[in-house]
Image (cartoon, rainbow, N blue to C red; front, side, top):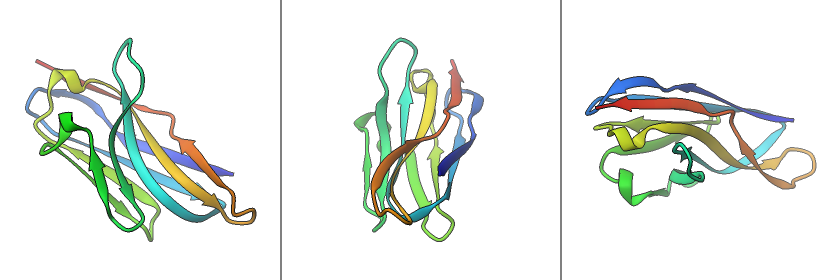
Length: 121
C-alpha cells in the first residue's frame, strides 16, 4: 500500500506565507511526479503546481511568482512554499503523486487527505 501524508496549512493573513509538505511511503518503486491541487469552496479541484522526477515544474498561472514547489527524491517528499498569499488562495490543498508500485510496476495516482489553508483579508 502507498500513503501520502500532508502537513502544514492553517490560518494566515493576506500577504503572509505558509509551507505545505507531503511524504509518500509504502510499496514505491518510483515516483514519476508529485504535485499539489486545491479545491476552493464550491469549486472543483484544480492544479496548483507539479514537479517531475527530473525536476521540471509547472504552475497554475494564478500562483506563478508566489508559490514554489520542490521535492526530495531521496525522501519521497514534496513541499509547496506559498508566499504573498491572497484570500482567493483559501481552500483545501491536496498532495498528489504518480507512483509506480514496487512489485507490480503498475502506475497509480494517489491523493493525500487534504489540508486546509485559510487566508484572511
